[in-house]
Length: 281
Ligand SMILES: [Zn+2]
Ligand SMILES: [Zn+2]
Image (cartoon, rainbow, N blue to C red):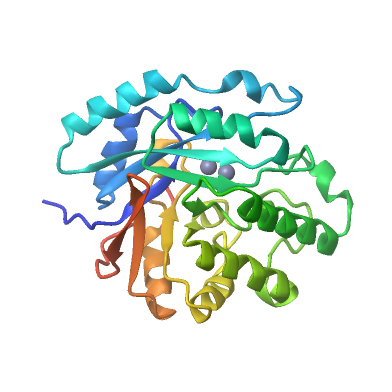
């Protein structure tokens, strides 16, 4: 029998998220196959204040989703099947987000920035400005999102902008924005939130995680200990992608544990099991 670690993929999208068709059952099967101890389904909560991309109409049915998760929790009593949300921070819509969270009790809430001043980061238009300016605006929005909003557990994919930037050099380096990063990391630590390491950057062949290891090194220097691992999988095959690689890097940086969030509380997990997958499929 394959050895299971206690590490959980804390950021995945089931068919309740736009852009995903992953059946929860398939996500669980894959998580078990790659040696994980559980999976958190963190489906998108995106209230657009304009309907330019229609995402406002694609919000999931929270009761239906909860029923599906509860049925799977009964089916897999010794495997963590957790319910989460990934909220897209925008100042104008946080009251609606808050209302949605209150109606939809979950294990974990990820706070992510996908838009800046109403502009989505995925189309190329945002990158018509110089890289330094675009990345500084992104980091300032992250800072705002964690100061102005509090009902979350984890800061999602710090460095997401690199996935879509059209610059030849897409990397977001600590050294280039040291002061801003220090402010952000200190707020995360002071507020008792976790920093996610999102492996989608490796799966997309960017060559780095979100955030990159130089930022994690600084997080540790500043006293940060709460780290979650997330693949951001929108299909089952990507669940747990590169977790083995990231665990080894974290150990090199001196971290001894990561965590996951259950019932809105952090559960610490030792970094001792080298059985996780190191490559994408
Ligand atoms: Zn996201
Ligand atoms: Zn996501």
